[in-house]
Image (cartoon, rainbow, N blue to C red; front, side):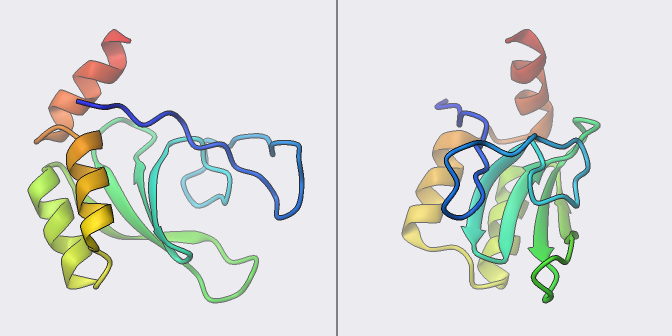
Length: 112
């Protein structure tokens, strides 16, 4: 499995990274797996229990809100497909980055 390095969050036009956050609703949450689109992303929950699909609230400064909670890669991919977020590129990225279950993912994370 290919691991995705932690996402480095930068302000638009800035060269210095923003401080990471452990708040899942924050723009700079430090455990983003993949940005699916400008308003959707997949994160690892802070308790290492599941993957979460989040949608950015409409206002520019709005928080990220969970719209799907998954412990299985296949259900995560089905949910992405139902939201019309599953391009061939995204599908490949998820297949390469994530094991079949969240428990496998969490085990790999705690061993590294």
